[in-house]
Image (cartoon, rainbow, N blue to C red):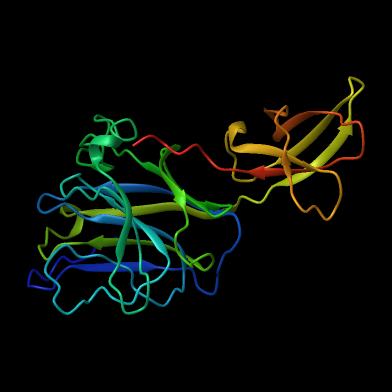
Length: 288
């Protein structure tokens, strides 16, 4: 995928969005793919796009060049723009559009210096960025998820950003794309900047309990699965004395571990009837 290789005039910054046809998603889910970013021999600074909860009818992009006519207005959803070479201080930025006539606004951002552990050089061309410049390709694993209203971006299985969804966009189409945020152009073809997406898929984060037994030790064993995976620390057991439950209480003594094919929670057996549920609370928010 390439963008903006011919128009170096004012207003030439551009973006391209790809959406699945007639497919929308809601609830707890994740967009995952493998990403290869090739740095061109000139003006390589571009941004890979990954987004959730879009209408599928708008072009979402950002420009850092002068834009007196507001050509980036009219987007929707929430998306991340991942810089290719760490040259513009917007290396891992999340955006949304607060209302239809608005230009995109930034929700949060991490600069490349804070992503050194995610993108070490080598094998990447530049520390803190996913770009490649040599003959040995290094791919990046990307996941953008929403779980219980929490939006999380993982890069190479590490949490890059995580925050509560501050927008009204909670369902819709997924987005992959490319954004050149500057009017300048680079080389085209294989000498230029381009990205490759592979293994694009959507996974559910909805949990399923497949077994509940009372052990001879007097404990309750709950076996469950999470199709999108996750660390045991991302789950918690909650209990209630009756259904429907007015409130669910955290089972603080529960111990959760991984098992072949899923997870297992061990909870002390209560003295009276107790109803349980497993909740995905998401990853710990990284320190700035």
